[in-house]
Amino acid sequence: MDRNPSTYTMLRDRVDAGQRLVEPLQKYANRSEVIVLALPRGGVPVAYEVATALDVRLDLMLVRKLGVPGHEEFAMGAIASGGIQVCNDEVLRAHPIDKATFDSVVARETRELQRREQVYRGSRGPLMLKDQVVILVDDGLATGASMMAAIRAVREYSPSRIVVAVPVAARDTMEQLQFEVDEIICPLAPQWLMSIGYWYENFSQTSDGQVIDLLQRAWQREARSRDKDD
Image (cartoon, rainbow, N blue to C red):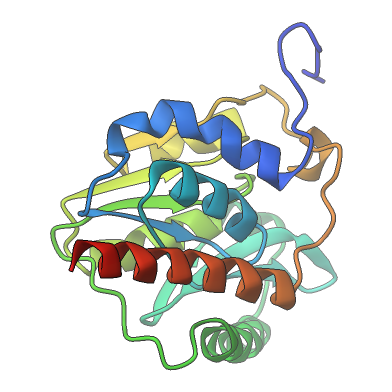
């Protein structure tokens, strides 16, 4: 169990987590082609701190984990906007799931993904990511299934660069993802993750209301910035 305080500093909360990502991402500050995409819900408070400090755009990449029935903490895969689906073969070998059960979980999570899209983004237009620098942010990586789905979804838009920025991640997951993106930022990569919440002093659930509030604040900031430039 790799949790030596002399080696790792605990994350106070998601605000603190986001602030710790700002310095290593400074080269992306104040650049019009950069956009931060949060993975809701827990990734939104983290991403808000990053986007605000760097003065870049903030939006969402909707992703839903496909939890093993009865053992939802294990991700057997993930789905993302645009019909992207990723399977975690290792988990599926450990927890054999028949096709009907798997499809049922996919259908349920697809409905929730669509609900969140409507609740969070409303009538906001589709993402325009071609030739953009995309920074994908979440509150941590365990199996990496959700982030992998997000990466594959973003790649469909032909961005110029994909960066993953997370405050804490399982070391083996980070090593796997480094071949999928241009850059990974992760200040805390313990050998034994245990769980993402284990590394936070406060890991309370992020609500729909908090997500909406932070997005509205970010989008109002962007609107004021555009008005100033006009």
